[in-house]
Length: 383
Image (cartoon, rainbow, N blue to C red; front, side):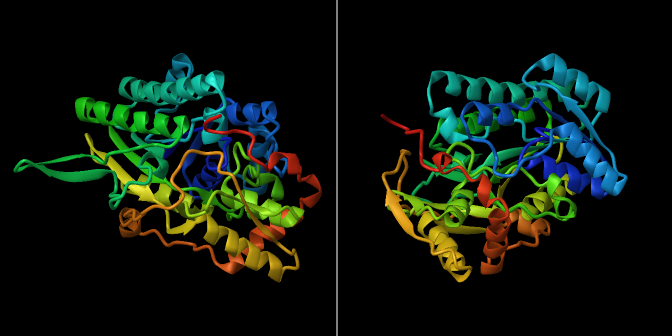
């Protein structure tokens, strides 16, 4: 298929581009380096140096004889995106092109405005570009499990059947996001649902949990093809932060009580999920929502896992609770459904001790590049 990836330079975008190209698809990527620029502005650069997008594509081509077409451009500019969609005429668009950091979105007005304007404009522009140039194209949109928040009832896959005063109907599952970034993803879903039901677009919205891992079949060929690995408080996940802290000899920083539970998945499983969604597209006029994770962990459980495996590697890992810089429940019910992708054929990679050990060994190679100043929280949800 002709596949257009928005945000093709990102932690997920670049591995997705390589994976789909390796499977025989015609892959086009577009990115404006927003994440790289914000990382530089906030002293949150990735641990492992990564070539720019054009160089990445050239390295990949030299190793595989496969081509990834690259465009450097801003999809929040409608003319840019419209021209790209008109040129590519994609059968599938994978939409990763959003500012992905919750902490960054909570820093102040300028950062919140940039997050809001970029994320909503990217989605709105894509909707209109597809309606104008590729109305039968299937949009695979990256959502987030963070849209749901932590309700005191089971979380369904996007939709909820309601009975009220003797009548029944089906609605989008109520959502209570915990940051401005996550709120923009809620607004994305509402936008998509309006245009799907009004104009008959076909959309799969993947509600993804935090992703971990560096290894993919393609990146294992050459370390210059590795995805962006951030360990800071702006772009780094709890998993990444703990891995780097263990290697650097810094106590693992558990926010608050550490009872926060989220759904996680391996990077290799993200690639599987996107491909499965592509192979079984949503119907015309359907907003299909799939919860994209394979297992749930509390922050404490993650810390225990990294500490145990790190100690087995001789790292002498310590754990330390610190004040929670975020506004979130630290002890809550969490039972989200996630059967849709399994039914499509997902074969999960679980976070075993061996997986954690391999990630730690990868980080150890770059130990000298760790900057401990990036690890501790620099952003607070409320002053």
